[in-house]
Length: 285
Image (tube, rainbow, N blue to C red):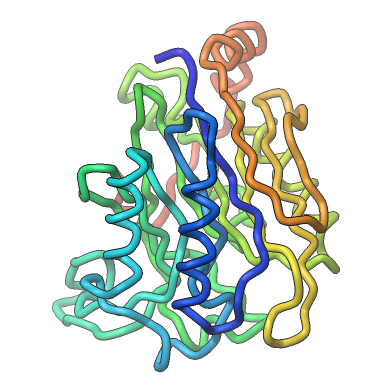
């Protein structure tokens, strides 16, 4: 219960080629020799950051989800990453404003070894690249639980919006908890030209939320000629970088320590002094 092992897969992606990406990632996952409990893939791991959901978005009974189920069961791990998904409901099986909507989402899936899964639809769509013209934004956070660890799951551009990730003082008081979650995971396709922001914000999210932060990014050029340097990173609750890798493909396993996390929070109880706020349209409670 006191430790959690997470494996990050920083890789180049075959542009809009699902079969090639799933084969490649299957090989990398099977190649993990260390004991691990969670395997984290980049954003849109089966296509790259494609703005063609009409071609590549899958229903939830599609091949990518089936692949995730198979790999999680085979390796006995939690497997997570996002892909373009389509759903007959507006948000994770819900009906909004009395209407059932058909749309595409940049959807992170949290797949358990037993085939059960949770989903998080990316809240902040990257309008600069037109993502908001092709996908529908989510409105609900997903905080999963593994071995007593609580894990907040987010996608790429969400990193720029600290309130969406912020530990909630209201929830802490209501539930008698010191923190709403212990680990914050970002899966991304974050370009090298803005890598300074990526690295800085990952550390900032760890410091302000007193949690571990895991950011998993891709490397290489995408189909639009945009280069990604990776810079995947694991940061401890004090903002210290435990792991990072630039430019190269890499599969890395890190062990997070609950005792260290609790020590930081006890010695520096900053969360107790946080400003109160309310997330509008957040139906997580």
